Length: 524
Image (cartoon, rainbow, N blue to C red; front, side):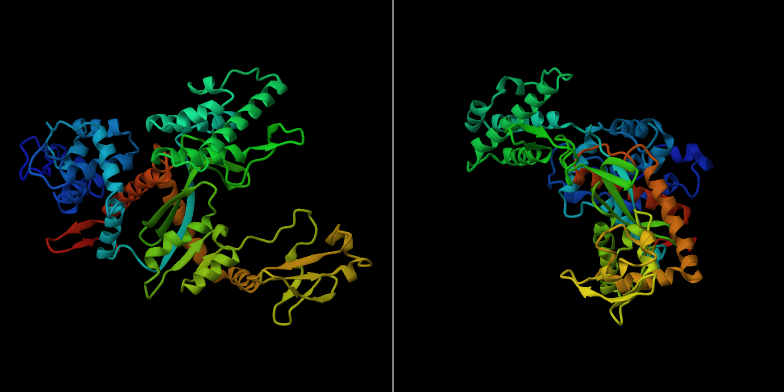
């Protein structure tokens, strides 16, 4: 397949000339129209294709890159994006094509993303915007603000019955596709073999509790029987993942009772698979009362330029602090490391310790101490880490006894019995005990610092900027708030492309230009 080449000279139907001043300065469309040939030369995607002098030429790199970025910027489907290229003058000007351009088929975008993911530079549409921003000095190094936003999955959350049935069907389908003799072995041990040929829920009187329990029991037994039939056997490559998924689904929602019957357990498993269609999606929560299903997008923002420095996608149940390493990986080797700002999700002692050891200064808000019982909170007690003692509100002082996890415990049971403050302090018969975390000193220092006007001013100045960027990132139809594909890697490609598009749009606002030798921005 030969590489497609951009036209050196457009015909008189130049969309940029037709639009004139309507192709506004400071817009991503004008930026791509003016400099797209420099950003995406003909060899930009050359590594994605095998060398060949025969065959149909590929779509020119500038055209493909422009469509991918503007698609992410506007939140369009593949069909909508290729339609825009054919009929929208702004898109045509940005892509460097004339008004008579006939667009390519939408499936070309699918193939391009697949090739991009398999390449040595799968994140180039984002990473190159970051390199461009660094070259111009637009991407500052003073601070990075971290945050996350929910990313709702592109599949329906499945109940236990649907998942069990679908997981068994996946194993059978994978074995059938590989023409494996194990397919017949599995079918021979199933109690409900004839019901796995179709999708959807099996027939059942859903108003009858006994019938529902019998169905769940039969499905679990079929799942266990199928796993037993393939245990120790060499599976076709395509069936390995299906078997692993079946094993996970079979054990996450059910438990065998004393009567030998498998029933759905009360509660939700910690790492529950929510769909066999997208096994990587999870239940998550942004706050105590705000729950969602799918993934999280984590962002690192430069608060001075409002450019995205890093983006990462995780399962929805991943704590924000677990993504810090990915967000700051590119800064780990820098001599002058930026401050790291974040909300209380990044304020725990372990995260502070790890970032401090790596040379980062952490500006994250430690949440106030709470007590669900409504009694005295821990901050009513004076913890002295120098003398290793804790003093209670009644003035009693006790020693901190070390624990195996590196922390300690201070027990006031000898003083609580006759204490006049007992009713306001504890309901426990054993008296009040204060737990001391292994990073207690770090948290004490952080709470003291965040009480100062200087800390509050610094936090107040930078924190809202990432909230605005998060809202900008998430406000479109897909890539920000809603996933349009399945699986973390595919969703990650969309997130990278959207981050790259938003960075280009921001650089356009900052006045990105090229003088023939170097890139620069008009605004600092």
